[in-house]
Length: 251
Image 1 (tube, helix red, strand yellow):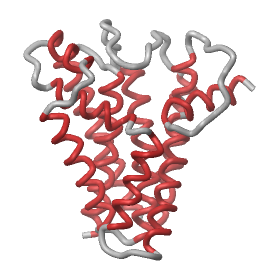
Image 2: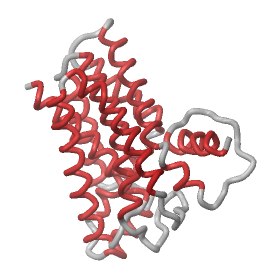
Image 3: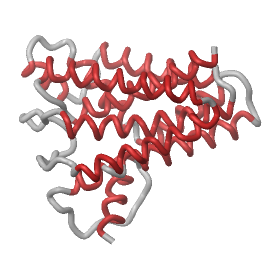
Image 4: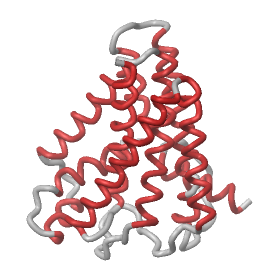
């Protein structure tokens, strides 16, 4: 039953799906729930793939891709998009303290606006350029892998001490078995894509890994660690990298 509670915590944190309220939250609820983030991402990606395939029965061109990406934003409450915008805005700061202060500001600036627009545009364009079933599989892989990238980030990079973000982080790391389970869910998310075109799946996975490493290194250099917003940004950039990689393979 405790694992079911952890899974519900993961769903509640990453989506707007209504769930019954929990009687209490353990102090380590976040790392215990984090191992299920890629599974929730897989489910989100599957829903988006279904939206895409259903929309293709009615519309052609870019409309199905736009509806699929919009469905993802709606289902997650723009949770990760918010992190991407705040992280992009923080690049305007001249010191770690300034960057963290910018992240804490709820207002969106020009960097954040541009980052959101480019992220959505690139995802929509990439999905629209793929055959329907391959695009659906790519969406599943991108969303499962993106949440796994966030899990690896929070387990490998120190959390910034200022406690910037909307969620109070726990200092408890994920256990080795929990990290492996998160990675297993991500691999499961990539399985349909690899089954359809293994070179595309391999290329997409490598692109996501490279982006994850680059963003983690940048966060260490500019902030001295990660925040919840950085975790959201890394998820978004992982999605973009995977979808662009698959679109490039198709091309």
